[in-house]
Length: 390
Ligand SMILES: [Mg+2]
Image (cartoon, rainbow, N blue to C red; front, side, top):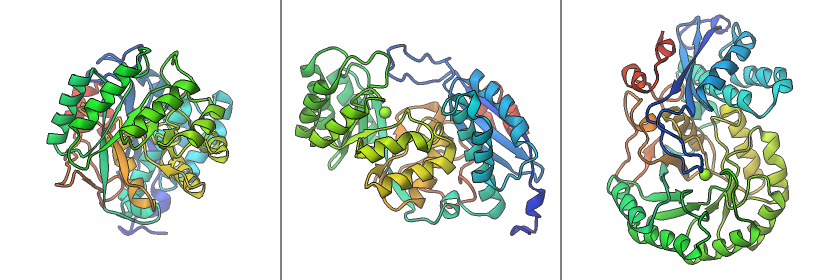
């Protein structure tokens, strides 16, 4: 069997894996135990092959855990055919179940799986969107994700990002729901709404996966009502991530669509939430759930249940690039998440993402993820970057 370049597919073997944790500009997450700039939260992954093609991916976890996870996974992946992302990722899942399925190793496999799809695309000359079934669209609206703050600061922030071209916004975490102050919560939402550009969209994220989230169903019901009055497009993580019964009740009662699922991993974890009707919108994270192979199964399963899918791979340029490819390949995707003001998204690529006049992002129709890292820029945030490129 031969690829378009006449290279034998059987010759494309994985030779090595490299990990480069990103540090120095880690943006705050609004977490109660706040992220510091030098904390490591995300790692870039490279998969090298004997065909001279390297694929890139991203995993959401502390860099030391990702590095250790890769040491565990490397013997299972080295020598494998780099052109079979689903089979090779499934091999990794199946053979590591006993080490804690769904945890850091699953996050690590996510980074490898994205890199394998990137290799398959680079080898065949096709974008991942085409390989995953075809391109329903060539651009999509990114929504700018911002941390909540006091009302006047919130309004200024939204005005600034809207000047740089964003038309859709999500505000979340920070003081919202954490100060036992409904009036403050509403004032933040009001200020954000007033600062939106004409026709702009606003979403609200309570961030109830934060440590010791203090509210329950009654708070979520009352807050959902308030958000509906302010024309908010969805209410995200309004409840602790495992409170499935309360999600079911909230979704049934709320006038605002209910979104969640960013901390779940593996498609199997989503199934009970979908079967029970817990979400209007599901937000799997491609850098956690098992990569593109798992993400597209979750998104398609959600669609079969009439639930919208919005990707959550927003934390690095490679996670976003993976989300963009899936946004092309699924029939009903209208948004991707885009963190406002992160160097790990805006400052590590050879050609940075750029919004068009309508605030949309083009989805690259170039081989693989369709984006390239800039080694010098990556090196600013990744002391171990050399192994990604050599
Ligand atoms: Mg969220």
